[in-house]
Image (cartoon, rainbow, N blue to C red; front, side):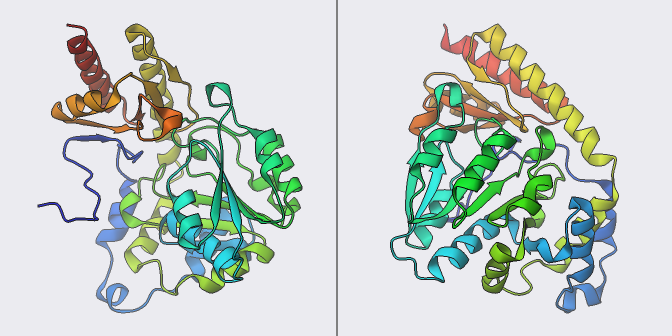
Length: 344
């Protein structure tokens, strides 16, 4: 039985949620197995894991806030900088297509989302974003690589937007940056209005642990810290992240498979005559026409992909996670079978 309000990830090959299809580092599983009774019965202490994350990302520990998934970081940023200051006429800027928590967090704090359509072939609309900035703009959500297109925002464009909105929070979501592109972290000391979101769900394979991280200078991060609930990261998740950070070979090895899988998906789309967009993330956006039947037919073959047709900017598209090569090959086989059946 499926409970109302709870997502149903589905059974079979899960290529619809951008998870790490290869799992997590063996060191993570070992750390979880070594969890003791005291780790479970007491509230977790965070100072050491915060320092470990700060070393990993090469930032000051005071610039680090751990969150229960990056979704919590997005919502708490909106609570801190909009709801808490009672900005009744607040606006956020959300370039499209967008990750659902951006407009959701905006709605949750009673603000208005100003939606900015993409350029041709999903080119990032830098000029339109800057033109949308007004005195009512409290937050700007920027996703690089973008979900669902996989497109990157050039660092120079991120700098221009941050410079154009000194009184606003510019939230740069880099959930997929480990798979391609350049992080904004080296620029962060120059921009005290920028918050950067990262996650351990994707490249590190810890989606089930629900650990995100928000990085920023105190002017913008401290208000978020003040509204974030204490003990929001459980002790098992804390141990998992600590172990993941010690395995320096796991992430590059998996990222290499993602790169190869993307190339295999590109080649399959070209064989099938399907438009697609080259991606810097661990997924590929593909236009298949009437997408809902394709998604259902692939699910019947135990391969789950994401239907993006509800978003007008990605009408007729599906999003396919690129992970372990064998999983990608299975997805390609299913897609080829479905497309062949449609042509009969």
